[in-house]
Amino acid sequence: MVYYIIGFTVISYLLGSFSSAVWFGKWFFNTDVREFGSKNAGATNTFRVLGYKAGIPVFIADILKSFLAVQLIIFVPEIVNGSEFYYQVKLIFGISAVIGHIFPVFTGFRGGKGVASMLGLVLALYPSAAGITFVVFLVVFLISHIVSVSSVSAALTFPVIMLLLTNGNSITLTVFSCVAAVLIVITHLKNIKRLLKGEEKRISFRKKS
Image (cartoon, rainbow, N blue to C red):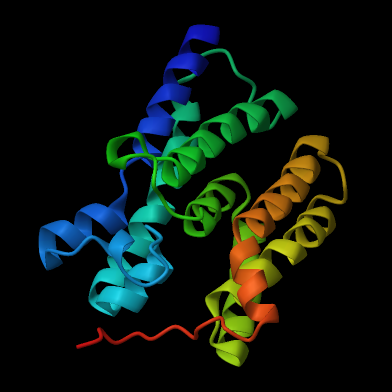
């Protein structure tokens, strides 16, 4: 079992390392999004630089990477479905994909912030928690029109949502939700600084001429 877990962890990282923002931008728009906007290889910057025609596919691809990585659990033999160890192995695969997204080996370790990939992980791990967290993100975005505000707000409410849904019965999921929230906030420290200075930009869904 150990060899399966190690092998699929590596595969998960490589899967996450497919930087959809970089490759979609280069293949279809002859543009490296890392050279424009926030210089971030994520869905938000893709929306900002290339518009919704590139942003939507990148967003979906980033979600799918970690979602599919978690599904590799079905190939691990002798693991009890629903056990704490089961969730822990799922997390190992999913987090490996998120790390791959943030530090992609195929594109010089310059990736995105991991919000969409983290959503894919949570969607595979606990769909109802992912759904509620996404609703929080969407509501805040419709009010603020600023993705970083929406991402941080959703991240901070995620541990509460997970705790309420699981009734605190899973230490693994509770700890994960808290760590995930902290990581999302850390990856958005620059955005938070810009917000405090009133310099954070609102997202535009139209490609700039």
